[in-house]
Length: 255
Image 1: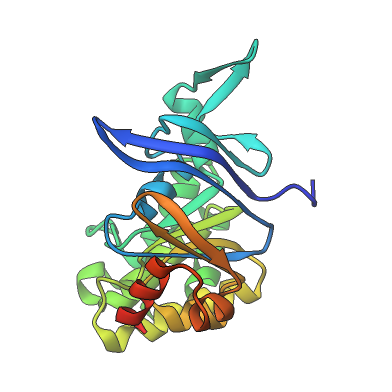
Image 2: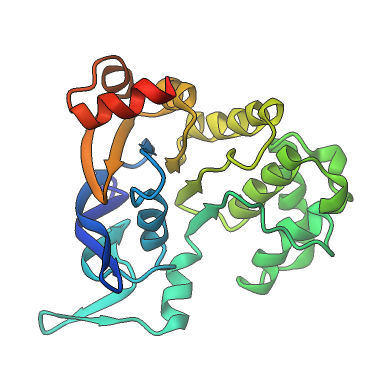
């Protein structure tokens, strides 16, 4: 349904033992929206991302992607956790790019991009290879298709990781601090690819410390601290005129 938000979080909480990392998070992400999550380390941003694709199981509340409850099915007004196979099926539609590139070191860039569509979706090798080459060109790496990760820079490896996520044709892309492990001069090439995805209408949730990217590319900015959403709004407004003292204190250190 075009009017259905792509992501709906309804009072999502997550605890690890006695440590409550997420405290009743509620937010929506529209189709085609780019949302940036910012905040200090330990504020729950990455945990929230991992809950969206059920890499972490929520302790309470609900998460839906494209109108479908994530990780659970509902019967007789009760929620039952899905079997791992069912959860994996949902996860296919949600691309995720991590801080560390997690490429298979024994595979070339091309093989890394081809692996999941062949293994998970059972698609033909010829069709997958053609698409993988298109995706590598899209991230500016057509000439590096036959290179192994060890012979690629960090920025190039991260762009391969983005192409690999796109190869599954996700409806949603999650980025967990995708530039934080990169040397400063390599950050721009990854952000340029992400900006291109945003222009193409990809729905994206990005955990980032890159405030310039948030200001220029994001449609919404969410500041999290201590497991709660402290403040959210249009990035230019939040960054220029934060309303909450915790947001002000954080931004004074990073801007």
